[in-house]
Length: 209
Image (cartoon, rainbow, N blue to C red):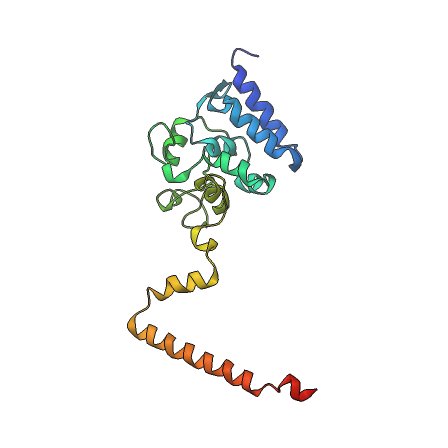
């Protein structure tokens, strides 16, 4: 350890080096190990002192050269993604002691040339600070891990996705106007008549024998 580098920095540098030469099979293991170590939260090296809040793991990762796409494709376990997502929830951006805005963190964290801090996820208010085309909003690690976390690990499906086709239709009917409801009723009657006619047109099996 040099006079300019602390123990956490040594671990961070080893992490960045290994991630750059790592097969996908060990991505989850290394990410979770770094996350749980807490070394990413505060360290010092020759370029300056770094301090990240609990909800800024994605800020840390991007500055170490780890992109969102790399994590999305390298981590297959939705439970691991959900765990990591707790430390990068873009919906809580600006919340004291959890996650700073992109402009704040870029002003307060030393710059690493060629590795600007980027958010994995963002809302519209933060999206305007990003370069190039991008979706208006984006969850940090996708919709499925967030739903998995919100349901306590029960499912990756939203409530409406867990409904049967009939349940979804019943819910939709409740929002129909009187005119739409009348049209639906007529369509149902017509469909029932069509099916009844088809049955009547089919030859009786006993007659065929």
